[in-house]
Length: 313
Image (cartoon, rainbow, N blue to C red):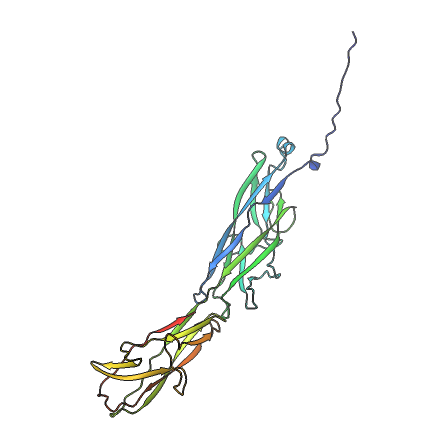
């Protein structure tokens, strides 16, 4: 009996040549610091999830390759190259808002392009592994005094994700590059104003009452370049378009003006006074000029009125 001997020769390539480990960042992480009132001090914080996934092929699963390692998630400099600090910038030229990116909410270690990464342990149970880690942002307060009321942002492009062996540290950019991603950061500064008014005192006058002038000022602080107008109400006792101070049932008329010549009225409708903010660290002093016209019939007394000062911005 003749027998046939059949054989198939298989050539196995080195397993390192058939490795198909792939990892990616699956979301678009953004550090959104929200809307920040520049007059309120203190740090502004943000955090964002970073969603990752990895996969490996059949042979890697069969032979137990790449079953566990450490993924190092780094963060590049900002879009203008800033790192210590990174900066969020507005569309118009103005002071940027400094911030930085950290691997813990305590903000002790800045994540850099090549060191101090977020260390993520990756452990495969099969073909897929995925998870979420977190990057933290801190913008230290107070805000720059001349910050613009705008959206400030930046992008940290081409931030790297690298693989190192378990037990090693993410303290340099060694290891194998797995992928790159972009981390964005944004903060919005709204138009904001603060206003302080000072009393207008006409002093003690003799009867018959002669024309009497006095002045005071209103202190206005608004975010840089923010337009605003200030209005003065007609008080508690208006009559016939005139303001009046009262003492019981007796009244003395007076006017409020924008100019020292007392020619330009100041009210809260068509004769408002306008300005543009200089920033939270600088105030604008707006003089208020008052005048009591001569009133020979004025009855002696202690006359007062209350004016509401409003600001629109």
